[in-house]
Amino acid sequence: MMIFMLAMTMPGSQASDLPLSKYCLIPVPEKTIDFKPPCKTAILSALGPTDQLLPDLAKAFELSDDFPRLTRPQPGDWLAVHHEEGQPVAEFVNCDWNRPDATRHKIYLQPLGEFVRGHGPPLERLRELASAYFTLEVELLPVLEINGPTLTTRINRLTGNRQLLVDDLLARLQKRLPADAFCLLGITDQDLYPEPEWNFVFGIATLRQRVGVISWARYDPALYGEPRGRDFRKLLLKRTAKVMIHEIGHMYGLLHCIYGKCIMNGSNHLPEGDQRPPHLCPVCLRKLHQAVGFDITSRYRQLLQVYQKCGFEAEAQWIKRRLRNLQADN
Image 1 (cartoon, rainbow, N blue to C red):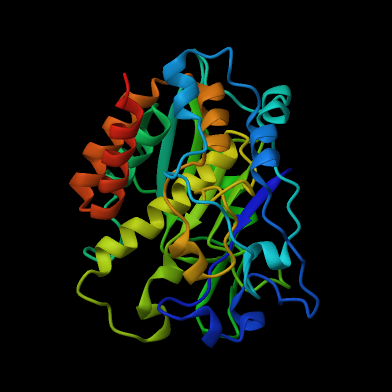
Image 2 (image 1 turned 60 degrees about the vertical axis):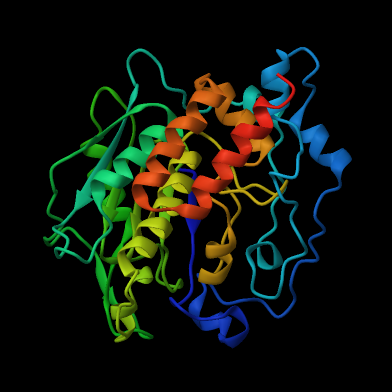
């Protein structure tokens, strides 16, 4: 079973202030990876030729200023501790990844356990975001209780809080995968861990089995006995939405991105996750377009409506600028 994970550090902390080996997914090695961001030529090679595309579509995949380049990772960042090869568009197209079709054409979101009213991210907003982002129908399922003897748990030695083993949750979700589901993503407020040696995991998705699970526990200051800020729910929604999109992206077969600042970048701690944009870089956008075949301008307009509804001002402004740039000279 091929699985992708996403890790985060403590909410509100700065990377330079953290003993990262304690708060990352796994201990940070003493010797880090010397990752060099790919040059423009390498990115264009990963993107593949666009000269045979319709002009509007070719313009959508241009390496413009709308898509910032990666910089060298800092100590403790994902690319400083995890080796990533990158996934060119041609490699993505030639692999037999999952694709929506006439039978499997819906994304399902499965709440795992009741959320305390006013504390969790608004699930209807997550549903709308997923639908606009992936241009598929998204259905929010009734709450599934996750108590019982078949769930493996432990007490995290750093936080003193209970954690659930993700394998048990994935097994339950696999049994409940609807016949018309492209994928099924569980959402929980319970802290998660993937293996005994690991600290925690914020999100996990299978690349083939079409199930995944995310937790927003690590985004809640209350996990650490800290007060929630005034804009807590808005920030919680934004962070949870990013992880949701990232993990659903993996279930389309998108691997971690190294070609620019992108929602599919790996993230090893919270500041790094907050700096990651909610959009796809041109390489990953082209991969998702190959998988789904949506109209890019219509997709951006739908996203703009949802971002405005969520109060995501910076994200809405990016979409508006992107639409202006796509429509220029037309």
